[in-house]
Length: 509
Image (tube, rainbow, N blue to C red; front, side, top):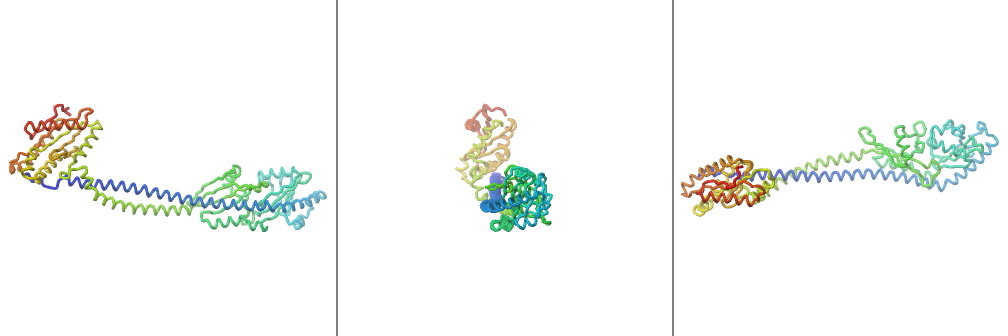
């Protein structure tokens, strides 16, 4: 037999290509799966970090609100004594007013020493016209304090005593308790103010200490302030000793929170860092004037959060890199281990061609598309049984390998070639004209004859191939197409072998 057929068969090459393809498929699959899992874990961890950050802020918010509620509740129980004392002092002041309504003659310093409280006189225009606290003289509440100014007008006309809860001194930022009593002629409103910062109750339940502790304990918190309705910060003054006010930039948000009684937030970028300003409206459970309406401002940064996210992002990338290396090695090992058994499940182990199962699956797939003109070519080796019986199966295997190689070479890579039985081969052709099929069949028989020439001379066995050809009909089944091609092959055998025959109803593709 012609020795050119005795080399490593294409089937082994196909097996190698299949292993490469399987490696790539496994690699892509495991990489995508690993990436999705790693990304899911990373996003879950990122969400947990964000929730932890938000929990810290909410905890701080809860603590400062609880501290305000506590001190307000304590004062609601204890400051009635202070209010009663203030009421007594107002009686003294009203007596003085009846005797001498000209405040310029009053000795406010002596009155302050007598009462232990600051005294203020507010005229009909809501301006402080006289006081023991010189810095506040000239302050106009209509101009500075909006709704509080309107409240003072109401109190001047009411004729009744009023006292508020914990409030703030406008000019100094000192935390005080204020009370009010109008003069009988409703021309003036008398005001008393007593500092609470030295009071034992305030010291014991000082919310400012809670604020300092929270800012110190939580790196994410820049500052916490408690504002009065007029926008003054309770307990804080600037470098000149004046009370600090909310900035003009944040005032609209502050007023919105105060008006809507809902928390508001503003997010700003500062030095490439994210800073959030949160304003939480607060009202004491027992309201006493406007003083118990406040707004808590928490300013917090995301530096710690962003630092953790950067850390986990870097860790995610490094872990993903390690995972991808590991899955790459695993994919190569898996492909090496399973490539051969998987390949053999769909290929003939001797010739490397597709087996019957793969052939039938491919034919059904092409028939299902119904947009390709399909031709089925069946090839059978003539007198092959005589080769096996006379020369043995080893020689028969060489004949099969050589035949498979020749058929595949002529049919080309676009056609499907399979070994479906002992010496029976099939070829699925698409988009071939009748002339091209004729040339292919002739070339196949001619090349096989040349390949078998030496073998026939030495063995005296007339080995050759016979071919049957059938084209697909409309709505035809795989079995019907296969039977017609088989019948055409049978005609080639009956007519003397070593030839090809078209099915009688061949469509002339």
